[in-house]
Amino acid sequence: MPIDILHQLDGKVIVGLGSLKYLEPIIDKLNPYKIGIITDRNVAAIYRDKLAQIIGDMEIDTYIVVNNGEKVKSISTATKIWKILIKKEFTRESLLISFGGGVVGDLAGFVASTYMRGIHFINIPTTLLAQADSAIGGKTGIDMDGKNLIGTFYIPDATIIDPIFVKTLSLKQIANGISEIIKHGIIASNNLLKTLENNQEEIFSKNLTLLEKIIKSSIKIKLDIISRDIREKGIRRILNLGHTIGHAIEKATEYQISHGEAVSIGIANASRISEILLGFDETDRVLNILEQFCLPTKMLVKPDRLVDIMKLDKKNWRGKITMVLTKKIEEPTITEFTEEEIRNVLGDIYE
Ligand SMILES: NC(=O)c1ccc[n+]([C@@H]2O[C@H](COP(=O)([O-])OP(=O)(O)OC[C@H]3O[C@@H](n4cnc5c(N)ncnc54)[C@H](O)[C@@H]3O)[C@@H](O)[C@H]2O)c1
Image 1 (spheres, helix red, strand yellow):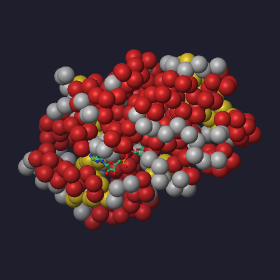
Image 2 (cartoon, rainbow, N blue to C red):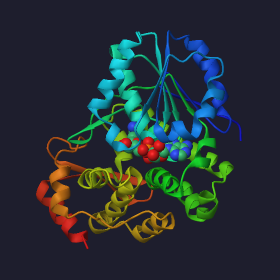
Image 3 (tube, rainbow, N blue to C red):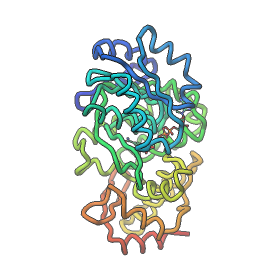
């Protein structure tokens, strides 16, 4: 498959096997004063040699290796990185490269967007979830009290998405990415859902040609939506399908459950609620697809606890809790609930 060169605002999105070769010319063109790379321990351990190969002769001024896991998306890690950049005398002309999954991408993007009011930023996502979803759309963030409550919108100069990195992911990590791709399918592409339904084995055996196709479809759906509403004032809110319940579950379990799994539970229960309130008649299909990829669908956390957390959700709109529901596949709708309404409906579906 050819490499696709797409755009989000004035940032390039380069997708396809072999797209890493674009890194060097992009950096040459940016001509940054000092370059820093942020990655996490796992990725650093697996890709030390590959990274050296990608970087080639470029001079890197600082490698920052953070712990892996959601807990590093914190103000204390951001502060440590800001201090390193100050110490290394990074300026507005400097470049930060994120090399890792969604956690590193959200954190590095947040630092890049806030250091000196914004420096050059390149994102190289290495998990399926980050490639198919989180590296697109320019959302950055750290967690504080609630998930991603502090953050910015910041479009990288370039996002380079090479599916080769999927090769070293565990099946659980593949499933985490599939969860967000299922979300894109439900929102906008029955064909994408069918591809997932019919190719579980090929996906779990990491068929890169197929995964490249799936990643490209997923990215195009997200790019199309964000191009119409980058700051999430309207249509972009549909991308939050599964995330009102999902984020609350992540927080309630103190991030012991992964983002992809939490979103899966969110999607499953948004489908159940859509069936009750809107007559959505494909709940079983949605649950089957999630379960095909060994993703959880049961609520896990009691409704009262979830609602207490949901009240802090940044997706809330003028005091109401919002949730994306579906009338049909490809027909998402944003629904607002009072606290009492959401308690009742979650109570109805909690087993
Ligand atoms: N900004 C957005 O729009 C957006 C959208 C969705 C999710 N997110 C965020 O993304 C995060 C979840 O991202 P994630 O699922 O990528 O988690 P992650 O970044 O924690 O990565 C999961 C694990 O995989 C490891 N890993 C990364 N690349 C690897 C590779 N190629 N081979 C082997 N192991 C590898 C990591 O070290 C980590 O242990 C959450 O914080 C979520 O809030 C952001």
